[in-house]
Length: 157
Image (cartoon, one colour):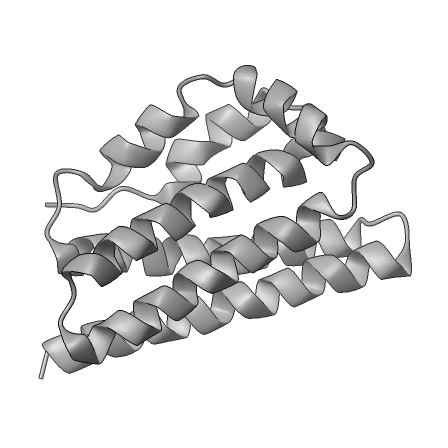
């Protein structure tokens, strides 16, 4: 079975959001990913639990950093998320039919895509400070991708 591409699934949703507000939508998706990581951690073996919790913490940190760039981020983010009410269902259904290893694979690919997305935002940022925030988010995404890929590598041995 071919696994879904996070980019292919999210592209039509992002296309409906104004470019300048896309980071807020992605920040909301980061918080959803944090919840997913925490669910995985609850059910994980002891050797995986701390790493999955650390991934959840990184997702929440990314969201906080991005939200800090916007005046009245909470209100703006609520409006952006309300404009794409299917986001939560897409987030759930993207992972639901797959094994945990397949879910980790999908998430790792999503983390790599997230890193590339934050770097793209950094290249187009209006200030150097904003660019640095986006770049720091990319690094956090890569740390989570690397952790998930290490789990996949160890499960294939």
